[in-house]
Length: 99
Image (cartoon, rainbow, N blue to C red; front, side, top):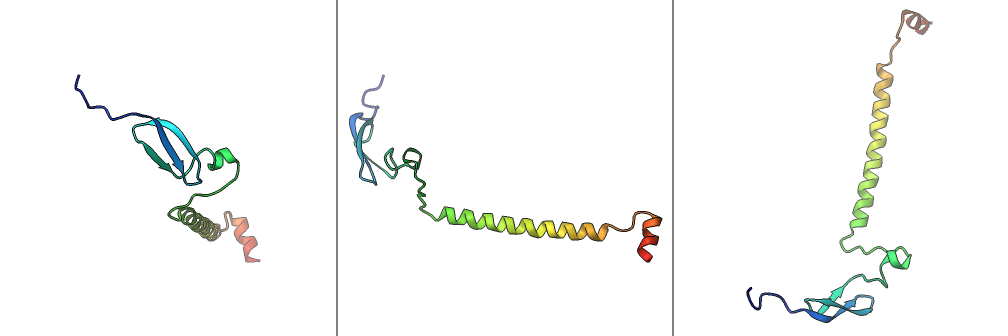
């Protein structure tokens, strides 16, 4: 077995959150900085807060809006095509249409 290949393990590694919460864990790094922890994460707090670093939520909402608009346009086109293709189906309907 080779000696000195494993990293140093810190039993009291300090974890610091953006909200100011600090706690200790075991890790190979002495100090760990995180953006979310159990005190500020929406799942644990019950409040809905978005952590949006690259405006991903806004991009998703614009894509969703474009998709709904596109779907409406496509359904209108299909409806128009169906109306155009619907012609009289029998001789009786053709004669009724002449009146």
